[in-house]
Image (cartoon, rainbow, N blue to C red):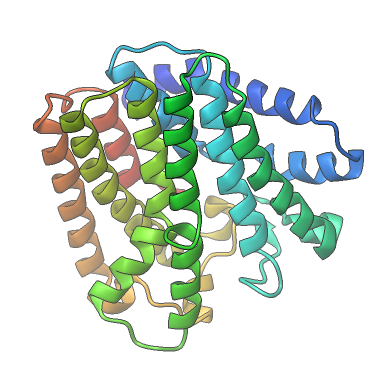
Length: 294
């Protein structure tokens, strides 16, 4: 990892963690529910999504205290999706980020409700932000709702589920992951642009970058599911094969998937070049995503 990215993460990650912890602590809700929400929220992870939001703001030379709340809200929605993904009715996994999954610790009913609480809380805390205009908040909520819902992440999860046991084309697999994984990464990146009041040209470049980096993220996940161990990944390795899921290696071969990973990386960088953002944090994040080992 480059020193620039290391320094950025070192400076911002503790603030993200502190902000999420404080938001849950101040929530007026049954303690059992807060404990279940906090368990998965504080279980670790790379925090790629909230860090992306803050990285865009840094690249656009914009400071806004509300950015940490927006970043936390996006991570809450990501965490809710992981809690529900792990349930017996979904992926039926017992391990997440190296720890027992939420339903293993708290039971299925409370795990479901913890996920529900995280996703609804996320929209509320954005709506109540003091340092953004009403127009910015509406844009954030609208885009986040789209990205996390039926036309984005949830729709992609359904397509992924329906594709199990069936042979998908490369175009069909891309559609799954543009929604399932890419949609939430996209709003993470676009959120920074919205907070910074970026112009249309910048927003379009960020959107293209997000599209390609989202696919790169998923391709690397598919590769790591084959080449990584459960200890490295913090979740059950080889799960995709056992579930008969369509993956980039299963369609393109492992070498073909690695080639496509590089193609998506190249297109992400090309998008940044159009707005002269190709020498900073967003490039470092692209490098990290395509080369990460867990």
